[in-house]
Length: 110
Image (cartoon, rainbow, N blue to C red):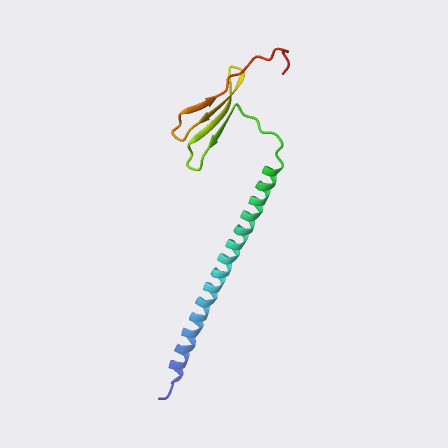
């Protein structure tokens, strides 16, 4: 079968069109990979900075601290009520099992 000049030009046009589409997909894929890589690097950097900030903390202040198990049940509470500290320990059902009672300081020192 003989290929005419028109058939040849038609094939050349189709190949050029496909090559153009291929270039677009390669460029889009490269941009997507670059974007993903940069966002991953930024995420890792942000996590490292957050961990560093957390590790350098020397003081934590609050009026209440809760101790909870892996299910989220409160097992203990350290709090300040009416200007006096209080520690409470709870069992697995949430029932108070051990409360502390604050005693006055006879020397008046803090």
